Length: 211
Ligand SMILES: Cc1cc2nc3c(=O)[nH]c(=O)nc-3n(C[C@H](O)[C@H](O)[C@H](O)COP(=O)(O)O)c2cc1C
Image (cartoon, rainbow, N blue to C red):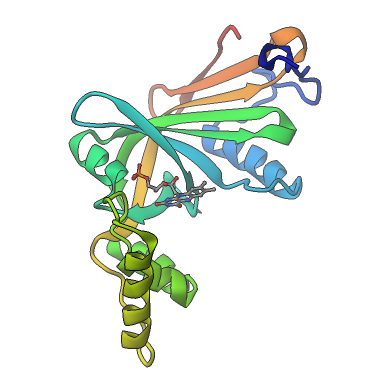
């Protein structure tokens, strides 16, 4: 079997300009709800692409934790993605809901969320995840795993009788979209691609792209 022989026809759904919602947020919620209902393994997983000081893109998966005027995820502000976003606040998200043969691309400006939202989410996490967020200097070189495990042991003892507070280096980011593309796989690679871009007032311009 050659890698190039692996192929799949996409036949499950269609997407038409006439059927999509007027608001991309509404369209996203509809597809997201279907992803949740479909029992996918990681429906909230999204690829986050950022650009660093050197002009090079980097990407990684993060989890969508909140959806309001934007797409919220939580992370370490001192991580590589945090450093990238401090330098260049523009980023791109991609959801791939494999079993639904769907992709959603979202682009926009990213800002830190309000401290109250970060506190609220941090405090809802399991104790060891909260301690882990304090212990881990995300994206920094680690001599070996035992260094992290030892740090965890010390912090677990420290917080045996008190709730760990959210560390200042950990919190949420919100991507405020100014571009959405909904992609539906179709037979013979003639996929449906419907784009939303801001138009006058609060409205969105909707158009189709060639696959
Ligand atoms: C399914 C999945 C979910 C993840 N969710 C998060 C997340 O919500 N926040 C996060 O900081 N890292 C998450 N990660 C880890 C990131 O992909 C990445 O390793 C980490 O954030 C460091 O990235 P950076 O060095 O580019 O900043 C997740 C990884 C996977 C595979």
